[in-house]
Image 1 (cartoon, rainbow, N blue to C red):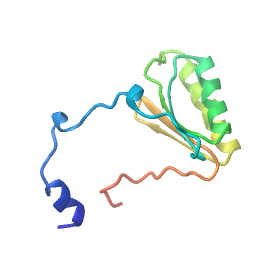
Image 2: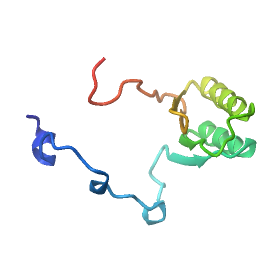
Image 3: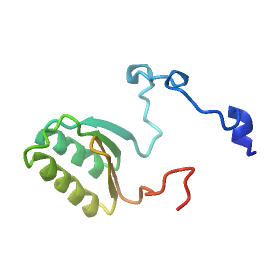
Length: 120
C-alpha cells in the first residue's frame, strides 16, 4: 500500500458526492507571479476560436468546451483544424478529449496520452 493510499483511505471507491464542485468566482485571480495560466473556454463559434488562439500564442494552456458546437456542419472540424494549426505553429500540443473537450498547449508543454494509474 502506497503513501497516498494510506492518506486517502486505500482502494475505496468514490461516489459523486465525495467531490466538490469549485466555483470559478471563488478562486483567486492573482497571476502576477505566474509565467503561464490555464484558461477555460466555451466554444460556440469562430470568434471563440480566435480568443483561444490568442491565449495559446500568449503562452497559456486552454481547456476548451466544444459541446455548444453543432456537429452536423463543418464548423467543428474547421475550428479543430485551426486550433491544431496553432498548436503546430507554436510547437505546442493539442488533444481532443471525447466529443466535448479539447486541450491546447503552448511551446514546451506536451500532453501525455497515458492516463494516470494505467500503464500501457
